[in-house]
Length: 316
Ligand SMILES: O=C(O)CCC(=O)c1ccccc1C(=O)O
Ligand SMILES: [Mg+2]
Image (cartoon, rainbow, N blue to C red; front, side, top):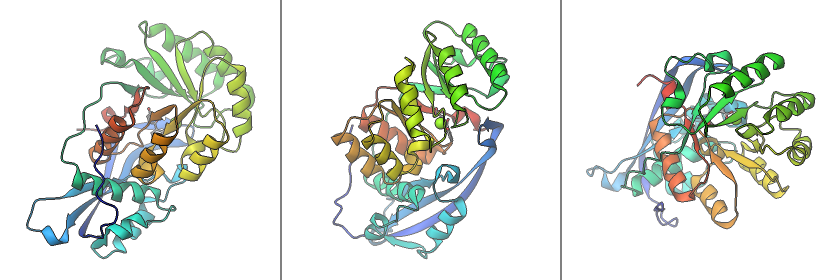
């Protein structure tokens, strides 16, 4: 299934509506970056000005992640408001790289306007477990919900504690279920070695962002020393970082968060020319950006489970 991009030479005008939102999580998410309680973002709607009597509307979502190098919600809101309720194709194509979440949101809205088919519902999704011991005493075991892959945040508590909980978690998992460990850049090199030793011969799909973004070379070395694949996330959160790591020959997995990586068309173009071992991952966006992510996933023909198991973290 392809995405229909409108002829990029057009310079149509759109009426722009902006709606800021704040959506609390059912339970806070604990990561190495801290505690996260709600998702704030912006929904936008584009309506072609010469067809206002028609029902054509395109929806997009701006869901920034400033801790990963994107603009903040406040900056995005000011940027949206600067257009005074009206925007052109040309202005959307010219959104600067310092507003990557806006690039994503506005181009998503254009794509939504020109693609009437609903994206397919993809089944291969990785579930996100609560952090720490909470993963062990889930009321309704999450592995009964059809997931074959589960993600668990580490580098939050004491390492000896986490290594113990990790063994307990693995002993509870049915055969065939694999775990993704996400350190959010929070391990020391020594701790990364401890984790990779603990992962050997265990059902671990990959260890995500063990070290900070300044430690690319150390992560390269680790990836050559252990059989468990490593994945980059924070290290490739902006388009420039993504290109840098790709061209530096990163041999592992790339966790791509399209909602903060800029124009979806640029990502598609890149992936059509170059092979990327990619996991498409959420930033806790709502259904509007999720629709774009599903369109992307269908177009990019990805092999690994989607990192979109975050829906259950919100009330309906
Ligand atoms: O990738 C996934 O499976 C879930 C999404 C996720 O973990 C995440 C969500 C929001 C912000 C950061 C991260 C992360 O991968 O570090
Ligand atoms: Mg991550």
